[in-house]
Image (tube, rainbow, N blue to C red; front, side, top):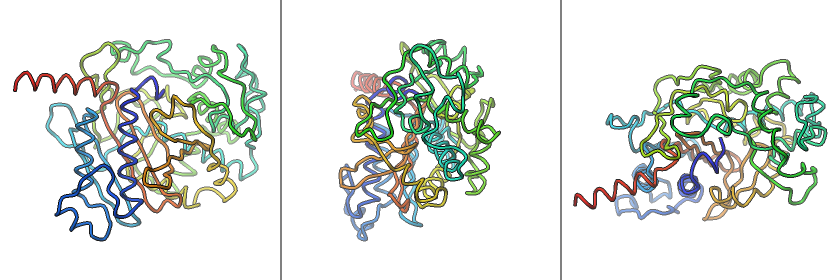
Length: 407
């Protein structure tokens, strides 16, 4: 859940680069970023459209350079969709990454949650200027934390200053720690309590701050989920289901609760924990520790359909969609993995090297990374899912060294 702690900066940059490269192909007809088309490719793409061969080559390149176990990519231009995949579904099994696979979408969950909050704002059931204290009295207090100063906007924008707590602070972050705790249940109250043990990173930003302090905080979205339940009487996951998943027909998207297993088809996820020299299979796990920050499961099709509907104005009135798109600069350490990124209310805006921007959200947990990029109107898109995180470069370097010795 913590991008700078749970995956290496280089891995984030690799995944972000693939998303930007593929997106620039889809968003700027005729420009194939970071690739060199063959004559056959050039002929096939005379209309300026990305070809399956071009996408497959880029996908295989990033798999090799990034040391991932498997990657799937979906690029859409209007009604036309191009897919590519590389690597394995399961280590040493020799099976390709399945098409239409379920995967944990990680922090892409935040955009779903922010959308529900903004729907409630549109309905007059809460306000972006409401304080955490109004909805959750006494929950954010102590050690300099004050819920009466933090607004709903701060939570969604990561300008609250609340510490970005992860259970690994208490349980440990080795492979053995993961194996010992992978099926543990975490309540949102436990996650918030872990955060407020720390002093805030900075005072919460006013709504009109020109350049507010910013830190990525999963805890802020755990609190947003708790506020949704207070305002509606239903858990955040049920509101997401009723307001987004069912109306859009997202048949592969759901909150798994305490169920640690993905439904088939799915690829395995692997992580190299600190101090380890072998992959740990992280596929089966209780994801309650992610809660409203990163707990949802989805598919490439569903993620694409969701963002297309959101950016196309089908889920939010214009005023609330405009609020979601009001972005601020992110912290410098976060830009290592997301160059030029700006953050709105659960929505990321990132510039492309060929000009223009993409909108969407990324997601990371131990074992996988998800990157998305959409045009402002949602007409063109890219969804990238890569398995194998935490040290693929080191494993790849060791593999190449062994190959050199053999050769």
